[in-house]
Amino acid sequence: MAHKQPKPLAMTLGDPGGIGPELALKAWQAYQNASKTSAHQGSDMLPFCLIAPARIIAQYADILAYDVPLIPVSDISQTSDHFANGLPVLEIADNGAAVIPGVAAAKTAYMVIDSIKTAVDLTRKGTASAVVTNPIQKSALYQAGFSHPGHTEFLAELAGPGTIPVMMLANSKLRVVPLTIHIALSQVQSALTTDVIVDLSRITATALSRDFGLVQPRLAIAGLNPHAGEDGAMGHEEQTIITPAITRLREEGYNVIGPLPADTMFHEEARAEYDVALCPYHDQALIPVKTLDFHGGVNVTLGLPFIRTSPDHGTALNIAGKGLARADSLMAALKIANQMAHNRFGTGTKND
Ligand SMILES: NC(=O)C1=CN([C@@H]2O[C@H](COP(=O)(O)OP(=O)(O)OC[C@H]3O[C@@H](n4cnc5c(N)ncnc54)[C@H](O)[C@@H]3O)[C@@H](O)[C@H]2O)C=CC1
Ligand SMILES: NCC(=O)COP(=O)(O)O
Image (cartoon, rainbow, N blue to C red; front, side):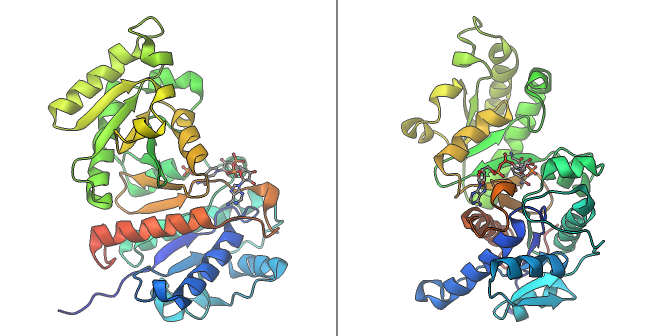
């Protein structure tokens, strides 16, 4: 049987004032170092191509004095041929905006967004296996008129009508899903409905089976209120919204526990009882996962017709261009994208 050509990963620029460009350079160096060790030989890690104006990446390589050759490619399919010799860069339209490490500017937003769109397009066409995003400075994009709270919602729009995106953050100790994402705390109560919980739980369980190899994923749903409402004495959402969702999910055959008091569900023994924790609001989910292992965390968007992973951290403007940024989380995002692609397509071929 003919061996299919594995497709590379499409990495986005992220905010050019943040640590994304530095991390991309460091990730390429880490691949090269790993390829020299015997442990890595024969590895099936897919190479990646950075979708960015090459002059920005060259600026960082220069500032940091990193010896990383940049290889311009006109087509992402050339990535595998060149990856051993340098970091492949697929050029996008460059409006020439100045980039200052540590400064996020609305003037660079066009390139940030174009990089994401291009990566998605290549992945949906099947010429890339997955999208791996570098962090964006959301406030700078908003100044430029970007109307989506973050990647997650933007990717859902690019995927098309009816897409329900699910944000999952994962490290070796914990997986979490916030059931509401980038909204004010005051809006959580109205956004959290039984239908939302059921829909997001189904998508999460399906993805954990298909992409992560869990046969019957165990879901744990957190309460919204202290002590999961203490039988209604501290709030009613557990009784009126969350428990009905859990009942429906169990009737459909899902393995679900909850509503669990959020303050006691993240210690080691409690985590052993489930594969993923679904939490009513953003910080309830992200504080434990980032606290347990900030540098090993990966953000995966489930529910899309393509694979997308990302580091769990942000743009870290305070250390951009200083050589201090750790690439562990981006490396973990590349690794998970790779595993998901292999689980989904075998060799990383067309995927939509
Ligand atoms: N996927 C994405 O595009 C994400 C974007 N963001 C955005 O990033 C911006 C900044 O967010 P913050 O809350 O300040 O979080 P942040 O993660 O950028 O920084 C928090 C702290 O962690 C440090 N840090 C972060 N990544 C690091 C790394 N790889 N190595 C070493 N230290 C690191 C930073 O220096 C800072 O002290 C915001 O605009 C936020 O919306 C935040 C999370 C994810
Ligand atoms: N706090 C997680 C986060 O902001 C990630 O957002 P996204 O840009 O991946 O949607």
